[in-house]
Image 1: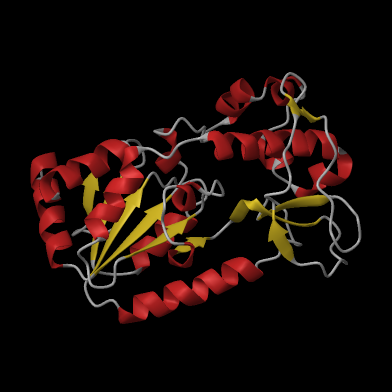
Image 2: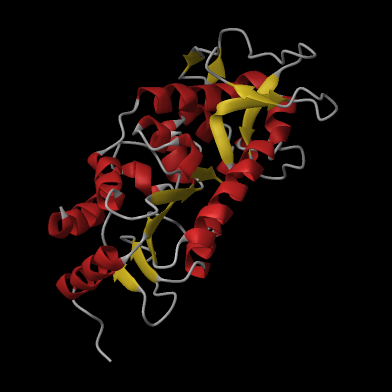
Length: 276
């Protein structure tokens, strides 16, 4: 059986979206690439963005790790502080708005499931109550001490200043309001047994409730990778019409899945061009 052409795939996707009553958007790092954000695919990309980590031969799994905050908090916060500042300054690309417009006529609207910690969906105007961030958010903090009961709080009051050449935080650390100790991002890192998942747990309850009400779902997966396939696995289990947009990892999870070997923005634009 021959694979459908891109035009045939888009036509089938458009038909499914016209008949759907809810849109689930599942997004990985590739969703942010078209906004200019790095996806850290391989050490070379990360070390190009953070030369100091390259000189120290620190790969992503070692800097995105609670142990890095204990061993060298200025370096760890240099990395995360730079990312926090970058995400605050980045404007979400047009695809975010197009997804909202695609979902606007649907009876149950849309919900987002993302591994991205960048807060770009909120910045693009998606309702907070319709987003699940399965790995947490850089825009929220928790205490570095696992014994502290402080919980999770917004990072809005922390404005990092980073020496980019050395990847070092140069201003004061964000501190825990309860014990005064150093805070860390409320992000699920590698080898992380102390991540506080209360916020994400509440998001999961909301998405479970939404999915229970949707009868004709369409899943649009955008830029989700295979190295940590949390996003891919979630979307593949939902049922309904499944649309994968990915320029590299474009495997078909089941026979009836629709696959567009395109970047996230390009794929969303192609769908929107036939719908809006």
